[in-house]
Image 1 (tube, rainbow, N blue to C red):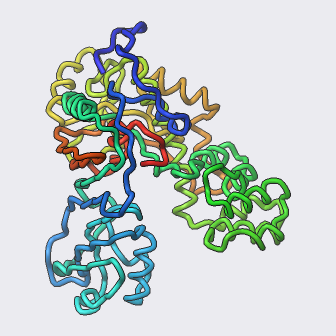
Image 2: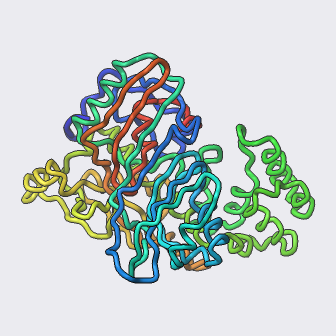
Length: 441
């Protein structure tokens, strides 16, 4: 992206493509690369998106946990865990896994089961293959992985090999790409999770609930749209429950509660699973981070180099987020930038919270400006009515490290293979090649 030149950065040349509105609405306001993009669609078939964990395996031992490699096709992680739970007669929470995976994909991940080897190897679930590896005294924990390997097919692309070549070259030369939270963090068809989170943090529980159960959005399923529209316009929860699609389980739970206890918006939110409620706040934090990163890029400040005032995060364990960091000053900037070039640390952006650690200098100005524009304060992340939704905040690296992208093109098809650190989004890389509609990611 070039070097930071002070308050009047050199305008990019040639003009870069502007992301579509739906991407800008989730804070992804710029593209990193200068190419036009080839469009296309991913995940037309599950085999078009193969993701394999790079695990941190627990040591073998004669413990109670069976460590297994699980390959699944077309299974969302939560649904797969429930299926395993029923097949093995154990609680969902007893099954260990390292990371959540998409439904429209072929996924290979490591899991742990507190069961006999015979029971685990004997499971027969459609489109799932379980390979027992060994026993261990330790289970698999969330985040217990180095990263993920991806093999992706993008279909229906423009025949523009130069755009692909140059995109890959620009990313490799920079040592990575902007570490945006990807579209699935917010919802592809209904990108509203961050809006629900914002209303919660502002204490407007009614608006939070209605944004989730009402708020019809063009492009979603017709039955869903009509039900949401009815709820939005009538506020008749008893009648709404009769027409609301049964597969929208969480929304129905909230509507059923409101049909019995009108105006109990807080109670309706509490009907949701805890992990889903927390996700709303996390999505809003992600939106703020995306906006901060976009503003830095718009100002021509590099993401692969520190400037004074930055806070850098060490990357020794491959963690992209941390509560700790090192402030960049005139006295240490040269040393820090040498370490960044070696991949040992990276500049970071704020994950806002009640104990937010703002950067200094230009980056600090950006972070405070975004918070001000959002009308949100650090103390708003203390949710007194629902304490478990409170968030302390942390820092996240602003570049997703990537040194090599393997790619090939056939007529109307682009194949890519690459590896990313845990917590980095493949779709945030793919958008640089595609530069298409958000629904195609």
